[in-house]
Image 1 (cartoon, each protein chain N blue to C red):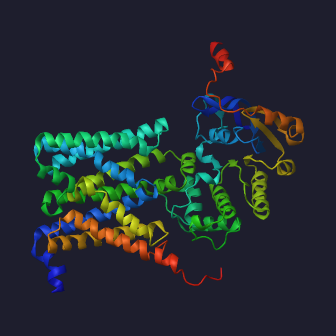
Image 2 (cartoon, helix red, strand yellow):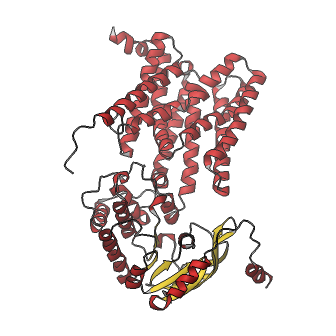
Image 3 (cartoon, rainbow over the protein chains, first blue to last red):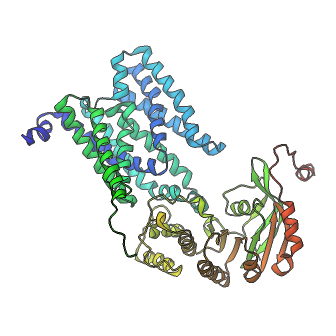
Length: 289
Length: 250
């Protein structure tokens, strides 16, 4: 019975195995990026970027229909363009990055919806907005896995300057010029992972599997490495449980995954070791020193 | 030999000068106090020295030093103390010159970090997140990082602000130790008694230089009064600097 509910769908159906592999790849790469987005107070920047990739994906759709390679390439180009332009404008004018990004992403979102509506139907628009992880084919899965691998490799390269720039940007600027390139590389990784999430969860929810696990991790550890590990596990478990929920109840897969992650997030707010509400209400006896 | 030379330096923001037409030199191995009222341009000058801020005009010469030979202790307000990083890891960033992007932290480096933490009196704090430290403890952590940087030029921005007398005494001893080792130290300070007692050279700044030389000659009530008066407010309707124009025409 339990086997049929929790394991059966994956042994029986290939599309479920592909979806599971995809959420694990998304979790491995997206969750660490989400942790840095949160710690750099850029959570909403990630959300804005998710909208910024829309016009590129829409142009891909306009040219090739629901061809995921074309939409991925378009999304990457649009996302990079907006990320780099917003980053360059912010760094060269002193305008805050979120304000700079807000202008670019609003224009992108308007342009994207206009392009989709030129050719598409409401069903196409729904696919773009919410994705469909269960419809993923082998080639798309390979793209997702490739993007995740690139993300982990680049993150390993920029990890040290990214951490220092997050905690003490002035110090990094005095000892190295790595801060600027690391920041731009990080924005590029955000775009890559949004495009990845876009395949599975759509533009509206793509950032969910990055930010919610990061928020969960924040309630369980004060150590960056541990936080990243918790975020990855939380994302993967949410992905698995969301797929099972979707399979058993016919809830759309993307929203199911994000809803499961939201339940974990609420549990963490209540019972988390670091700043959880229950922990604050019943902190236990104070220590000697 | 000059470690630092200012050639008609003007530093500021949006074309408005915060440090205006500064000339002078800091000798190698000098211990210099930089004083002046709030808004006098002290932090701006230090940011110019470490290369964070480009001069609006003039130039700063570092006597052949590159960025990695300079250690900068900013005001701690510039640090995000909510970031989940331990004292050990934070202090360890001071080894950037040796490790760069990929260098590992081996046993010798770990011992260096532990020694630096111990020498500022923070034994046992290695695994504490920096967000749980008091202001004085955080200042000790910043000094430990400067220690690890092993720099020839050390630039300190109000290093003893809002910390108790014991911590101040401990950290001041470190500053004097660096001076004794022949390093050049430049510190923005507000405590005149400390400057008089421990710093041989003083620059009084109030946007422009008011006086610069041996502390006993420079730190007079007259000069301090001039500094208080000279520190002007930011003026939106200011015209282009006439001295600048004359120099360009020439």
